[in-house]
Amino acid sequence: MAIVLKITPTRFQASGSKLDSQRRYIRKVSSGEDLRFVNGQNMDVSGGGLRYVKPNGTNLDDGVYNGNFSGSAGTRVKV
Amino acid sequence: MSGFTASNSRIRVIETISSVDETVFDTDNDMPHIVGTTYLTNVAVDFDDLDQTQNYVGEECVPTYTLESVLVYVPAVWYNFSTYTPGEWTQTYDWYYGSFSREFTSGFTTYHREFTSGFYEWESQWVYDECGTYVPYYEYSVDAEEYSSVTNIANLPTDEDGTALDIDFVIVQATGTRSTGGKDPRFNQALPTTVPTKTFSFQGSVLLESSGEASGDSWFRRIMSVYTSGSKLKLRVQESVKSINRGAYNSGFPHIGESRSTYSFNLKVFFGKFRQ
Image (cartoon, rainbow over all chains, first blue to last red; front, side, top):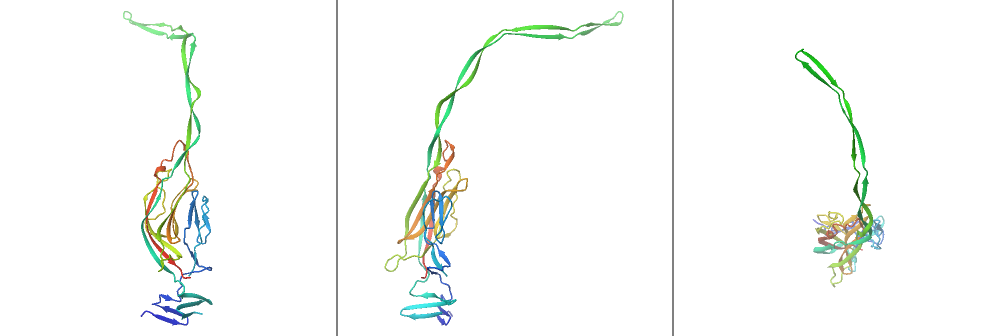
């Protein structure tokens, strides 16, 4: 039978363990992230070239790009 | 310390990992979830034909020639020569005596002398007559271009008050077809496209087409981006073209008028939020 609600000193489970304190729910953090989620335009073209904005917000150009687009860093995410 | 609290309409679960309390669940904050999904069909992306310009380089000479004739006297000449007639034996049979007799006639040389009269004749030749005319010659170049268009393709999900939600991320699942495959203006071949034939997923931007020079440097890019701004989901279409030369005189880019590409996309857009 599915667990409706179970609370022990080291674990919390509810709704058939859909909510479980031992699961690593993805959450947004201001620092100490495990990964970044790209959110927004992360490429630009100019002068026949391409700028790719990496998830950390730094630019990677192809050597031809001559624009000044600045993308934003992805959302910091911790699991 | 790991624990569960429920007080004042707030439920909170904490997991302690390596002596650090991490919030697993807190009703005061959002849980990570998809707040809305939008389906967009037949989203059109259209890139126009490229343009070219005829650039004056200079003038080149088209030479003319004149036929000049000269009357030349060919003088008279004596021509001396000789012919030799070889000697020969003549043999006769005498029926009366029944005997043969032989007679030899010596060879001899005959000397000749012939005279050819002098005469006049015309000698003609084509003589370069400098540049009769000058004609301009041109080199063609693809026009540099920076194109960008932004359109609102959807509204963001809203709360119960109709206020657009603050979206943390957008994931796009797309299927697309290139309805018109533009050609590289230099060659009779379609521009390579990166759009796969099956469903693909992206966040942010997608490179649609590109082309390079002989050196490998890029001169042509077409991209699209899907992102949120304000209360809208936006589609930005961009094209960037660096001018390149044809590399031959008086010859335009043969496929400049076939460089238009069009796409049609079906987009399934997931709007999501993370737990704070």
